[in-house]
Length: 327
Image (cartoon, rainbow, N blue to C red; front, side, top):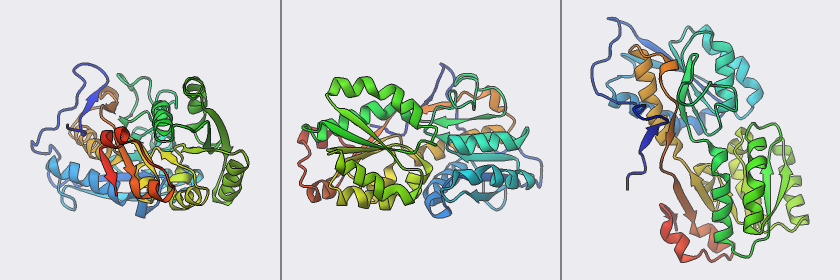
């Protein structure tokens, strides 16, 4: 099954990706600004996927384009400042990661086109007017990550059938927390699970948060999307292991770091698709006319090595449905 298929939000809105020649003025070298809330190290696989997408479309880095990068290193408060720095570089298009990154770019960019890659809701976040007709100078790819929270909770319940209390690690400052709270209460009741929201604004509060989970006798853990959490994923995975909490995550990097389960869209695929948007814009299309794209396939990754360390026997029916199993 092809798990790299993406579709637009309206019929006929699928973005073609022809290999035709790049229609740029002779001698013109395009400047692409990369704005990321993560660190340069964490961004390596994402930018690599974007570069592959550009190369597939006939763009040669160093000849037809180059990338100017700015990183917030896990501190969203820095995004407005570094977005302004990018704009001063007179770039041609901004590639922005996350809802906060896209918003910072939108506030700083003026009329510079922006291509976002996010797991948040760009409509609810005030980034676009609608997925089908984004309007303005911003479009891109979104996985609507908060809409997957119910599914992640179902998978955690299936992996740990006896769980009745699930801790949810949240950052109150994150734009993803509110939508999760609204959408998950109903599914939690249906599954017979009590959700326990545990807050952590920054890494200094991680230990206290996990101590609270133990005090409340949590039997499982969900970690919500947040720039700070992704940046410090290794520490969160370590604390989950120490607390012996089976956990499900919304970012693949957590499982690569030793977390138990991931369910969601592939960010590397999303960045590869973002290259199609950049190509379209650089060859004359307007962001307002390019529907925001959503992935149609999602991945389930299970780390059986972590399950064994937790003394957890993942049901074979769930293992068989996984797209990847880490032994």
